[in-house]
Each structure stands twice: as C-alpha cells, then as structure tokens.
Amino acid sequence: MIGGIKVPSTTNTYSSALTGVTITAVAIGKSTVTVAGNTDGLKTSLQTFVDAYNNVVKTINSLTKATADANGDLTVSAAMTGDSLPRDLLATLREQLITPGPGSKLSTLAQLGIQTAQSGGTLTFDAGKFTKAMNDKNLGSEVQQMFSGTNAENGLLARMKKAIEPYNKTGGTLDERTKSLNKTSTDLKAQQTALDIRVANLTSTLTAKYNAMDLLVGQMKSTLSSITSFFDTLNAQASG
Image (cartoon, rainbow, N blue to C red; front, top):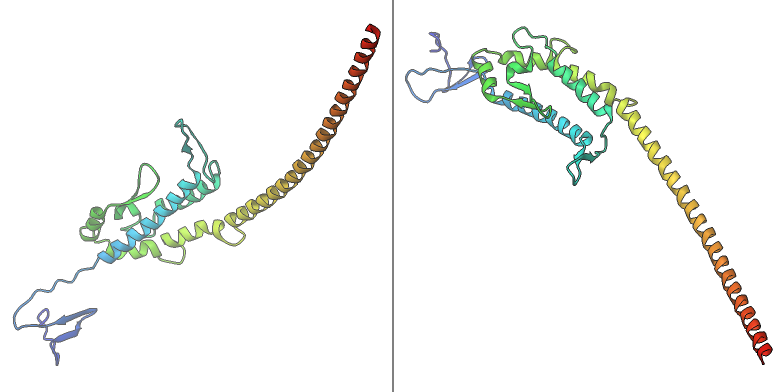
C-alpha cells in the first residue's frame, strides 16, 4: 500500500509505483519513505564551475601582476604586465556573473552561496548557504534554468560563451594578438641577426685597423731607435 493505494508486484521490487523511484520491500510492516532531491551532485557541479573560473582568474593574475625585486619594489614585470587585454577579458566574464538570470526565484549566484572574494577576484562557495537555498528556499529546480536559461541566449553559460567569443574565436582578439606578437618576435629576431652581423663586421674592421696601427707604431718605434742610434754615433765621433 502506497498512500492508501494498493500496488501489486510479482516480486518484492516496485518500480512503477512512483515515477523515478524503485522500492524494494524487505519485510512485512509499515515504513515511511521520504523522497527528496539529491543536491550533492549539484553542489559538486557548482564547485567545479567555481574552480574553473578561479583558475582563469589566477592565470590572468600570474600573467599581469608585477612581483617585488630584492628591495621589495614591484619592478619585476610579468609577461603581460600593463597589458589591458587580460583585464578586459576578466571584466567581461565578471559582468556576466553579476547579471541577473531569467529565473524569478533564483536570478543571482549569491543566492547559491557563490560570491566574489574581496581580494584577488576569485569566487567563493558557501556550502552552508547553498544547502539552505536548496532546503529552506527550495531553489533546486531553478538552478538549471539559471545556468541553461529559458532559451538559447539568456542562460549564464550561454551569456559567458557569447561574451568571450570575440576573444577566442578564429580571427578574434586573442588570435590577432598572437599573430601580432609572433610577427614582432620574428622582426626582433631578424633585427638581432642583422645587429649581430653588423657587430661582427665592425669588430673585424676595428681589429684590422688596430693591427695595422700596432704595426705602424712598431715601425715608428724601430725608426726612432735607428735615428737615436745614429745621433748617438755622431755625438760619439764628435767627442772623439
């Protein structure tokens, strides 16, 4: 008997009594079955989302943040210190995180316990607040709508994908920046090669001039010695 209704079965397993629920009877008697949503999987998925976003933030910070030198001054530049591109990309993502979703009961990540940390820009996930939102406020059914949306455009994931598309698409901002940096690298290598050749040629020319001058100085010293000896001989003859 389930809810006062007799449910027959040829075995002790009842799979058609409640949609999505299988009941296995192990003894004769009365039992209370509580059916509730399993939010553990949902919690894991949200934590995965938070971790993925935080990895992006940490990567951008490592590429743009200057570090201190031996004197404690922030003078050691990272690869993209002073470049606005990574910060623009991060700002674009953050804008989507705080934009309300299409749901009526659940429209912001803060309602699920996901908030931006005061320092560093990473996300934090409050498991207690999440559990309260699932149990007390019964927001479990709204989560998918928040992330997937009511159409192909207004869900959080779709909006984030659309926001970063100008950056990561073929021919987009990151692609063009990569091409520009590769061209600059090629040009610098060519300039370095040309400079090396000029330095080698200049070194060879200066070495040849130095050797010629050294030879000339040696000849002049030899001539001076001969002239000195000649006058010394004359003086000796005059004295005798």
